[in-house]
Image (cartoon, rainbow, N blue to C red; front, side):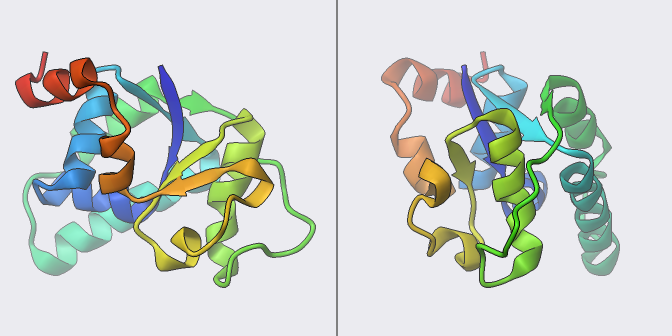
Length: 146
């Protein structure tokens, strides 16, 4: 099973829109991918998901997806960086989570992450690029939902 850190933008977009980020969330629900979670990362998911829902009056509530990630995630302690790696230092938490899990993949839409070239050997892929790496079997499971 693929272990991946999921950027907050991917998580939130996956809840409210039916596009590639939604396929990432479905993959987690189906057990195809396992998200890496840290306390700071999960807290950001919660804040961002509820903030967008309230600001844009979006449906559905994010509770089901938050619970899915909370239960299926691999919880780790982040490996704190000595100096910033990302242009936006707030995004370093994704790299710290990957290092804490010894994970080599971050799925992100955030340009401050996607411009990086494999920091610490960690691939940073957009949802579309990541989904293109799936096997035929995995793609069929995503489409069928089984």
